[in-house]
Length: 110
Image 1 (tube, rainbow, N blue to C red):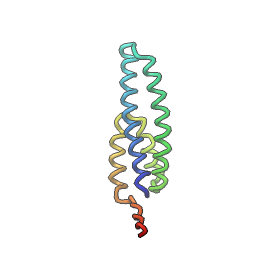
Image 2 (cartoon, one colour):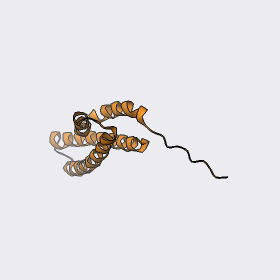
Image 3 (cartoon, rainbow, N blue to C red):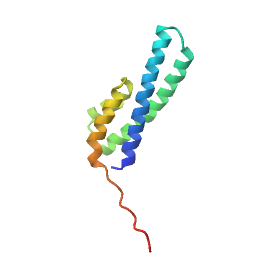
Image 4 (cartoon, rainbow, N blue to C red):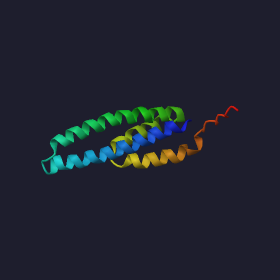
């Protein structure tokens, strides 16, 4: 598996996890203090879009890593549970670190 597949999953896992925490904070302000309704709307839409991108990258990683359906489902759902994305990303990275294939360097023509 190429390193780029894992890297783009890791980036989206962190971005999605951070956006979910921001969204949770916005929800607390919206429902707890009755303020920030417009900000909450924008943040929720951004998180929704980024989550779809996360799903695509996580599914791509899972198919290339040949994960069973249960594991793939857990990784896909990690973007919906606050802070779970951070822990799942670390576990996936440690697991797949040994399966990364580095491309052969191209010899320079003399």
